[in-house]
Image 1 (cartoon, rainbow, N blue to C red):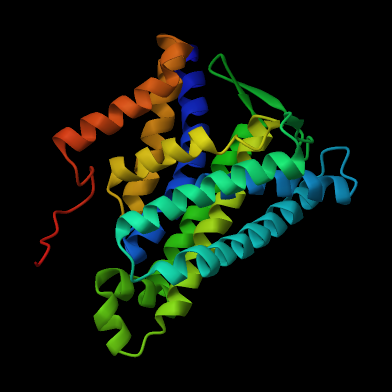
Image 2: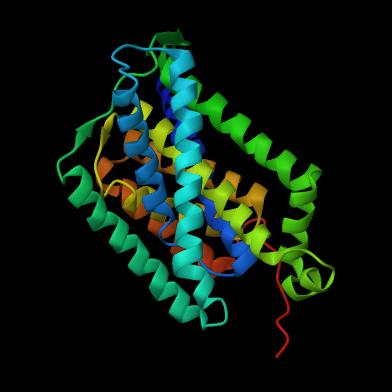
Length: 298
């Protein structure tokens, strides 16, 4: 029983990080109908932003208020990076084919990976302990306070996103553009502002995920965004790409399946299982668990 609870908490903690990244994928797809494969590198830049901010502030011991400041500043930094990428790389290609945009996204991803190696160095860096990790014993399972912080932070961020999308004017505009971009434009909605805001929100969530991931796994490197980014994409597809609750649920499912695979089968299969899920969902239900079939007019 204790082993099950341990793996459950580990899976939920990891899955909540995947969910935050997956929300960025699904937001961009909902608006522009393409996959931003550079999103994993925004996650990586979030981790490095947190590292250098901690060094700049001289954080050499756990400090919760400073950790909150670092999280907020990191989200601001990654949101700016996301908007710059959208303006420079994606905006000029809005009328181009989806294949062109897809190749560009992969190019941006590779550019950020190797630029990161040039700027930060290829060797792994140790992320500072910005929050004290205290262990709790729950039914025989050892639960770290870092995991609790990750779960609470992710839940707050996802609820904030839901509030923005469902209760604000910009959220209404996002839903309108997602439903029909042309009609929304004719109704007076500024499409450019909506797209920029979407990249701001998606990139800030990825930056937050980078900090939360680094708290639990305090070794970061310029290629760290590759696998989490791909797994978050799988989570978005699993839940139904373009569906916010689906992306959150997909992230949690992928995190749980991966963790239970490591705990009960073998760590060798931890990456393979995620891609197996992608293949299965594409074969059985291509629209995802929460996705709906769309009729495409030709």
